[in-house]
Length: 161
Ligand SMILES: [Zn+2]
Image 1 (spheres, helix red, strand yellow):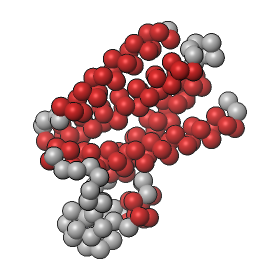
Image 2 (image 1 turned 135 degrees about the vertical axis):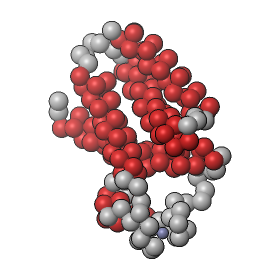
Image 3 (image 1 turned 90 degrees about the horizontal axis):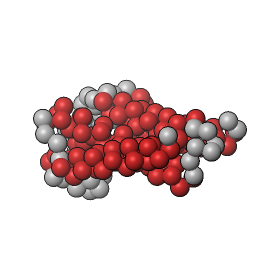
Image 4 (image 1 turned 60 degrees about the vertical axis):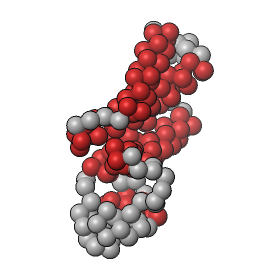
């Protein structure tokens, strides 16, 4: 493993944590049929907009010590955990697909497809599990993404091994 691999692995870990931040929005809003883009992140209790630096994955929650900056309402520890889980998943998937497999195991295109579908599988499974925990039902759109990514993961891994 060279320096460039380490930089890429860390970069994908950070990207995964940012995606995890978006997954929190999906988990929270999608079951209610709300927009995933608007309004910007805000405290559900006092409705104050969350400051950009408090929106940094994991670090924002730690800076706030799990409480809203404006009204001190508790912010669930699930938010940073989802971000950490997503970051770790991206990190591990990169390590598995691009570093752990032997060089002659697969072409770059096949690796990229496996990697992307693994990311979608992890992200959608996390959403399915947590939306189910909250509401005991699963939005069909997320279920389709999860099923489609399983199909692609199984097909591509079958080509590699
Ligand atoms: Zn608040």
